[in-house]
Length: 498
Image 1 (cartoon, rainbow, N blue to C red):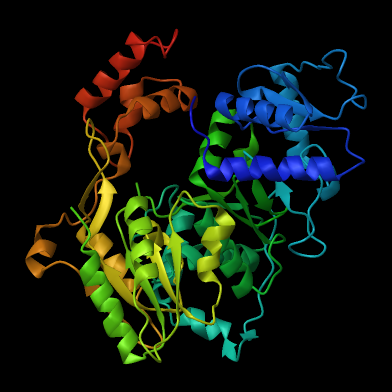
Image 2 (image 1 turned 180 degrees about the horizontal axis):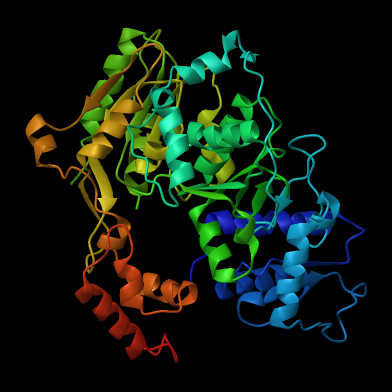
């Protein structure tokens, strides 16, 4: 049976605990997001806890309902209400024009969780972008001060500030705009704010959705923008990620993940019709480690007694576990700064990933994959150790360790401290750097295309090859044809032959 990732298992565990502890709940329906193996896991978990369970619905709308014995209204038979496609569209249109209030929006999903921010409701089990309406953003206080620093002055120091007006004008003039810049220049946090400020000045409503490749990046971006605009997270600025959300139906900016955006597109509803701006951030994200050399560098940093955290880029999870073990066995020298090793990779729970941003009384040693490249600046990191490696592969080749690109090297260097200045230790020579590719190939050019082809048929009605040819980095027509023929062979396309 297909394995269930730890993120999903922990989310299911939380829902079971909430259901069991709430005596007023007699039944609870999980979201339709879960796959068939995940629904089987829910059924097995319910059986182990002596809780009744039942699956209802078809296809993408199939859900699992759990209920306490002798208290449910669905024990005897299913209660279903079929809506036509026209009815679905009419309801969606009504919700766009007259959005539900927060309590109404939460009740079909789960009990509200007010533990994060008083007065706001944290929604869980969200697998698509919520309905919303464009609003006129508020003007921020130009002289707002945080921690003794003028936030407006800090924003003006970012490299992207000099291009603010051309960026805003270009976005107004063109339907599609590509903005490229070095890590840390302010693209992620400032461009959405420029749009909001321009619409506030012109008294025009807007609804911006910014899609991030990873959940932790979406949460961190929302928190940073809300902080700079001096607003409470979940009001004007919010986020939606898998199984978790803190946003409003009148949020001017909602940060989401690429996964959630894809499910919204595949849902075929009218949610995106009210979105005025869609930002796709970090669209470029698509050998052995010398452990002894890394430990020697750490010893050197520790003996210097310099303040600051250490960020180590490793190619994959296995190397992170191995290095964590070696750090645990490392001999501690007298009077050296105490270290706290923490891991950072995509398989971790979002809350565990977010611990990396929290201040610590010790020197943090962050063992990370290339996940940290796309993060909002890690302000406490002063030292970076770059192995120059990444876990990757090409079409037809399994995952393997290979050199990263020159762009990745520069992005990793940019993670080193900004105040005070930091240092980056590269575990490769200048000749190795020159042999690296300028940029890493996009995922669409390095991975099998069967999944892309299936998603294309759900998103577009035309020919798969024609759709693929319109992407920023179109794959070879030969590779597309081979993937399509393979899907036909296993009858995965059904009646969709193009």
